[in-house]
Length: 249
Image (cartoon, rainbow, N blue to C red):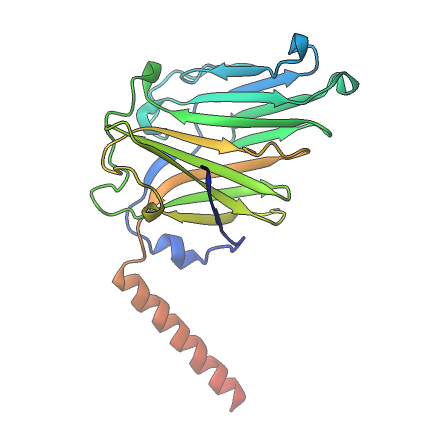
């Protein structure tokens, strides 16, 4: 059963990220451009949902970029896009999934349902080799930066470990996102071995909402603010309080 956790569209204050301990990057989307465009209904004769997959940074509609890339966990990524429910009346409508300019974008034309999945499982699906997402015990949660999204956003994150276990949870946001938003999800939600991860799958619009567009800037794992950062935060708040008191005086 897919598990949902509602995360408010709160823009994290700068110390919430900069004060965090080491981050382990899953994907910055800066490297290995890819693009898929599915046009309906021609793409799915007989009414079946068309699905296109580009493996290991295959370029698709744009020039490919062979790996491995340090900005992609395991060096490589796969992207799959499925066009759902594009009837004959919507001939020429499309669903798109692209990587470029530091963003992953999923978008679809009016009246169209579609979703996209990014898979990080190494070269040729060989796996990530049991990567430690905790980064030696430092990281405690996922950090997702959403640059833009329509109302009804749902993103999923599914993890697979070396013992054959897997678990899935979702980032959710009920509002429209027009400027970058930081979302977090704790490792404690998953029942997998975070020190032995073999595959990661990220889904956009997994509930197949109509007229849904989103762009994502970054996926990584992060720790929590270090004690020194908390001290700086406290000092800053105390300083702000003294300024307010002086103004009142």
